[in-house]
Image (cartoon, rainbow, N blue to C red):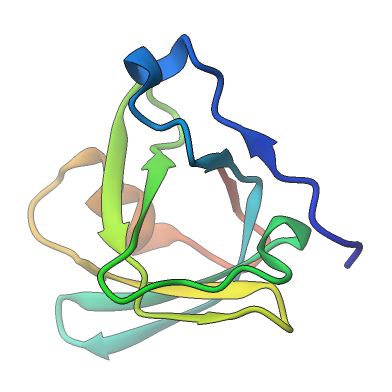
Length: 111
């Protein structure tokens, strides 16, 4: 894994409301069921090297296979040395992100 290559969110995206945010390229490195109906997903990226999360901070993910559908998840843990972060997803219904998370596997990519 190389060093971070974070790309700032362009001012014209989201009406400039995410000026201090970055676009990230993430890869699923592990998936595990926390309990029935809840899945933990760990993402890795050079973009996350040195990233220090704050309590309650979230990540907005573009749902693969959709046009402009995004979901936000609280960062449960981040490891700035390893360049990883963890989220937990409730697998309820057939929503676009729940459907993606239910089948996510190491090697899958997401932005």
